[in-house]
Image (cartoon, rainbow over all chains, first blue to last red; front, top):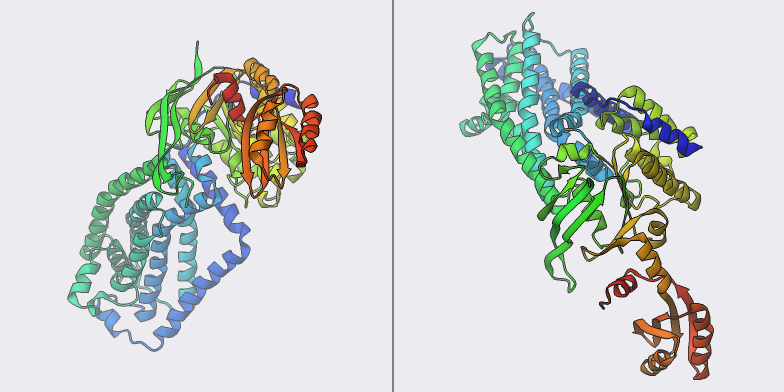
Length: 291
Length: 329
């Protein structure tokens, strides 16, 4: 009797239509949210860590002066606002760079990657689906950081156009850094070793991209080196928008935006190429499911 | 004639450890040629490490072959991998339930997979209900999979493989971890899907009797090669023909003499295997009639003071079948 029900159900003619990309991505997001929410302690610690980090820099700002921040061109908010933007967006970058890597590693760790990659989902939708929740959650943490900062007295110099300008800079931050994440994941798929590229990216950008101090404090060669990283342009652009009231129409911000677009356009095809190579190398080695 | 699965000189070589501990090239799949008709229930047998799972993974586009190619549902696994992936459902029992999201419920696992396989939402919900009902998981549908037993996880994986109603099913050890009743029900469902809906099923197992009950044709793999491709009738006849017993002997001071005496007995057709370690001798013999052979061998060995630890009738091994069918050692 039970068999007959299954046979009857599967005999019904249905029209299989490709699930739309937004619907497919939404199903990845729902899946990841449910998994994330099931780790309640970890979720609470994540939120607490974000708040503590902002409070730490608030206390640190009490023993610093605003002079050097203002000399660097960021007129309002002093060191606390400067550091708040730095740490909030640096964390955002970490998610962008490491999010895809972590998602795919989790799939390998859980033993689910072979099942997903044997389904009828195209490769780009799979990648997009894997990273989407990381961005949503990192955006939430960015907002939490900024709200905690505002409660602790961070001040901004904003105009009607400077907020959309900062949001656009954030999108450029994500797109430029996602390329780095995809590229490093492609390498890891083949090598199965650590994550040197994303590690270097996180720590080097902290040192020379102006996360905690203005670039004019660095020796000229480190400042020049910092100009090779997209985070440097993003932080500069966002600070100009939020601390100095500049907009997309200001020459300094236009220059930052142009640099980010060039980086994104150059890095994305390379990253996708390397990822595809790494993926096929793992299929050749039979190691797709290994970590 | 239309074929659901075709393999042409399919080879997969990995760099790995070879027998003597040195690194070298291991051929997990070696020049495999195979044709499975549409609607056929095909058994792929072989011991662990024979290459069955690697072959299935190549057909599922998860592993790229080193040489040769294959077609699934008429699509080339190298050139048309997306179309291939829409054509099959895959159950991989080797994972023991690891291929599910343990932090999601059974229904969430199935719902996510249904979207990946382009099943419309209303159809997916109906099918999820039906499969959960079929596998007796309805009352646990919202429980996280991490709290499921292995058997329950296997059932969710089976439902997942069938959810999008594909024409071809790769069932890699589908009854692994299931209790006897669930195994019987699963085999019956697969048989019904084959006969009623014309599904092509490639069923891998290391259990000959399971394949014998279910399949029409069977291939046996060993060291990456298909060594036998025959009808199930031939396999059944072979299994009936091979009657084997195993004897464990303690304190065997003179193993050569024991083996010589055994091989001289009229009902012993052949000594199939001998292992001698620390005065413990293990012998596997092919005999004419196991029920007559067991008391006669026991009596014979006792008569010259040999201590028998155990003597029993056993199922023939893949090696025995290979030797019997091909005449090669």
